Image 1 (cartoon, one colour):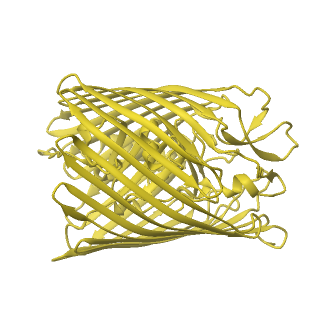
Image 2 (cartoon, rainbow, N blue to C red):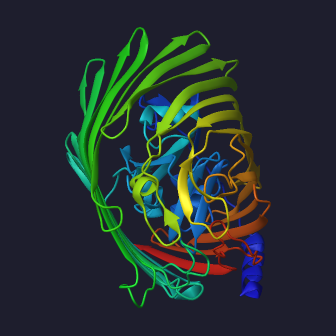
Image 3 (cartoon, rainbow, N blue to C red):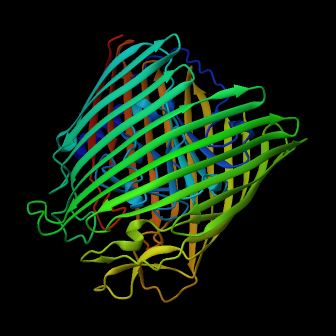
Length: 599
């Protein structure tokens, strides 16, 4: 396999150097929807990074989990191929401290943050991904403790029908049908996908099923999705010796929203329902030995209001949700969550100032307010300085509180987490250069993690007295023309240092094995109009001292307006590494793709 992948990389580097034609790229300002106040990207005073649909197609990633690995400060701890089970961390936070949204709908799960990535969409349905880091994410309330990721689905701009097929290592077979239909007062985007694989080692086979529907009907919009995953979980949980584990998850979303505009007012009400079902067995061939079944439902209604006036922009919103959990292990629980926010943006010459407050109330925890402020100073058309400070908060999941297992025990006496976060940043954008630098500091109180004093003890959830996280991240992008073709290189680096004030903790399971050093670089290059190439390199060193290097690559070619061929190679040089729970990641593997646009 390694010989084949090296040969594949050689082909990428030398492909089609004999042809060259003019390549014109038209850029336009993107409005950031991860802000409650809608702003052009250039005006934001927060650390926000974007992955565009063009980059999604070029990068050597076959799913969102792999894609997010390219972002500085983002830590995706994967178990297996194709993001089969992945946990999401930002700037050293835990898997429960990052919020994922789909078109602005919050996809948090009250059972556990392990399900945050369950409903991630097919890459072909995504217009862009907005990653907001640091205290500026506080406006979303619960689960946006360290950051938030908003997945923006594609606009319906044409009538089309596309079929996509892929085949790769480990008998990995994938098929997707994508349908777009535009009509006078709206349109429909629909996607159906199926994927299966024998797995890269014993008991890591899987079957994925997905359905996505987006409909715009006049002023109303509907978003609906279903994702089902059945997979062998060799060593995924419990201990690495637990090789016969198995899990099935089903995650669905239905959201109905509308938009009213009246003068300077924009009102966007929405109702939504998210359901997650998780079935886990310890011995796949004998579920009677140990089996968990959890079903969570979250039903909510929210309204966001944006007001434009001579004093600036004002954002007001409220989100009321009722959460239900039915479980044979955690027992049955429910809670009501009410989150409100208010912020106002002032623009004074070269300064912009956005103070705001989020208020969260939980039926089983206290009501708390989280004030914060964002400040920006535009030194020139190319340079901007900014700073944020704010409080964040997270209530324990039902797993934190009530889980009972052979190696794990919850703690119903847990207190909610809180933190004060600060950030200073610098942005530079001119001609072909883009540079962003951010320094951050977070003081967390009552941080929740699974700990134990001795190796033979059970993992038990508990609050730390205090954890201080410091770090910085840099991102540099440069575009240039070689011959007549546009090329692009991007490099990023992040550093994180955790200081635990409670020295009595001997072993921690998740949050305190942060990525200490993370270096990413990606080169997108073309030698002719029809062939695109991309190579990425990632270096990671964690707090526990483990380090590894991974190189991925992708080549794609348009045969004509209907046919597109691609090939992706991951872990080209067969690095041996794990990202969580000592689960070994796959060695070098390939995925070949073919898409055909019927009309």
